Amino acid sequence: MPRGQGQAIVKYERMEAQTAFDPAGIEQPLQALRRDDALALHAEYGVADRLSVQLKAEVQSGEDAFVDYEGRGPIELGLTWQVHRGAAGAVSAYVGYAQAGVGRNAGYAPPGVGEHDWEARVAAGRSWGPARGLDGVFVEAQAARRLRDQLPDETRLDATAGARFAGRWMALAQAYGGAADAGARWLSVEASLVRDAGDWSLQAGWRRTVAGRETPISSGPIVAVWRRF
View 1 (spheres, one colour):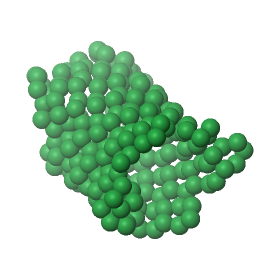
View 2 (view 1 turned 180 degrees about the horizontal axis):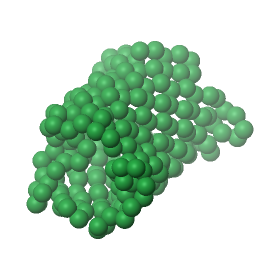
View 3 (view 1 turned 60 degrees about the vertical axis):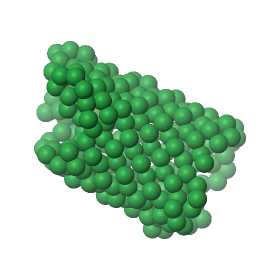
View 4 (view 1 turned 135 degrees about the vertical axis):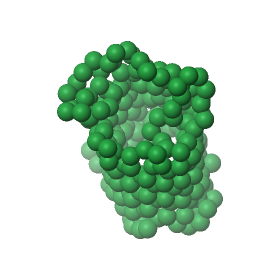
């Protein structure tokens, strides 16, 4: 974000799974329905011309055949440095620290985070001007390495393609992939629409797991409210 400007996104998602990919990548039924709910905050604020601070926090709940959990998810604080910015492209680097959540109910185990995690991430994006009836299009790719305390380390790859149209609309197609050093793999895809209204935006879409190993095949809606300040 530019210096002195920020953006906050509050996002709700409800994912359910009745099957999962086994260690060989073959779809198998789960013993019981798996449900994961999350209400997340992602905020970013520009503190210098090329430096911004980021905050991520979640409230989580869910259940499956083995665990029933509810509580605060991980809290992550990080810095993003804009390595390069041209007329139509940018490259940035991020480093962040995450602390595990605190939960209630039997068998709570904050999913996807160790007690103390560190992440290093590189992102690159490119945009193009109006063409073929669109106000503009853009693509972005990110690669990250997450060092997790008490859990296997992870490598993550994310990609986004988007298009702006009709002045206030944006369409997004996104993919989230990753691999844990211990063998788990996952790839989820998400499609959504975003509608701008001044400093506010509303996002609605759907996400689904399409490939992986040792991971549930989850799907469900996502809804988010964006606020620029």
